[in-house]
Length: 208
Ligand code: GAR
Image (cartoon, rainbow, N blue to C red; front, side):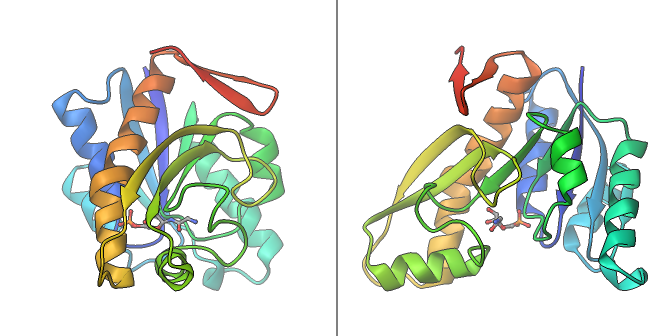
């Protein structure tokens, strides 16, 4: 059984896709041990509560320094003894101690086809604003392992989505979630839970 901790900052629709995936059997061999948010008001914490999953808030606002926050965050994660950390819209810079400790055991969902529209400053709606601004015709989402860089780790799954004439950032964000994120994030967890993902030379090999 793969024990996962899901880290969130906002609405938690990707968390919901994971919860539903575990319930309906799209994700097998997996237990959601806990949900951690940096934001007390994140609707994602409500989703955890409604599904009887332990939820925790570790907010930088509650600590004197970033170092102390980083320590507390790692302590909270370690407290669940997870096999895998899933960043599902967690919009906080991951402490280097955590990336080192959970190397190849932490994944992230990013709302673009990496290496486009990723890295520092590209998160949430900003990604879709930038894509529309550039006028690209195809966007998408990526699930990747987290390394010390921003969105630079080995790519596990990607899925493309078409831009439509007249899209707003909000409309495009929703389509990318529906047609890509909510599909590839549960799929990636299921693959990892069943030992089907191997990392070699900064690339992954998937055994389908
Ligand atoms: C998702 O679109 C996710 O890909 C993005 O934040 C949103 C969270 O939505 N993550 C990033 O931009 C990470 N760089 P959700 O809370 O409804 O899952």
